[in-house]
Length: 284
Image 1 (cartoon, one colour):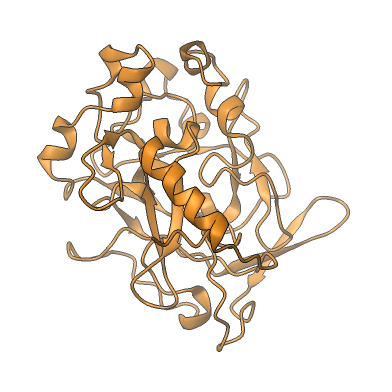
Image 2 (image 1 turned 90 degrees about the vertical axis):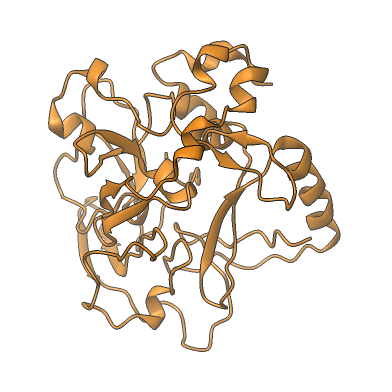
């Protein structure tokens, strides 16, 4: 159902993804609302926790791109060819999508609470040498070698693709990490995603959407003592975002932000993604 024309429109990311530009979930929670950018013609929508918004303002809110007032032609993601979506500054003064930062394993956030700036210095050169098979399949050969690629999470598969191309094609996953309480961001080529989906249907279990917010190979907020966030991560650390803020909405639409560390009981085994939705059990 995807055609290459959709990638060219101003609202292409929004049309293809819907809901949050980072996690694609269309639901918002009082503890983690969907926030819409008030910039002229901007289609960015993000969950508070997905963009590192420490406190949701009661008045207008602008994404970092609109806030910067930088000429649109100058604002392009250093990791992919797509211009729309939720961007943040990189440590080198450029821009990158938050979703690209989450799914390219070596990318880090200097501050995991505010999710900025995005640190690209540890991304290996070979990621920039890979070509995106999704771009090639959709007649965008000129874009296929732009930026950096992630690879299919299936062991032995060498298919590479841009994070945002995979996002628009619905190929991104949040899986259980190596420890019980963390999350691994990964994606699959279309072939292996379909195989995984078939497997998932045979082993399906559903759970109510929990409220905790966690992220990439990082402990869930319920296990982190509240204010002690390390503002920088060493080179060996995994890229991560972890927001322990929750907001309660009133009928006027204003949000007050408070600590939300008690959202999951300490013995809770539910796995949740960055926006609080249950993880697919993507196991083979």
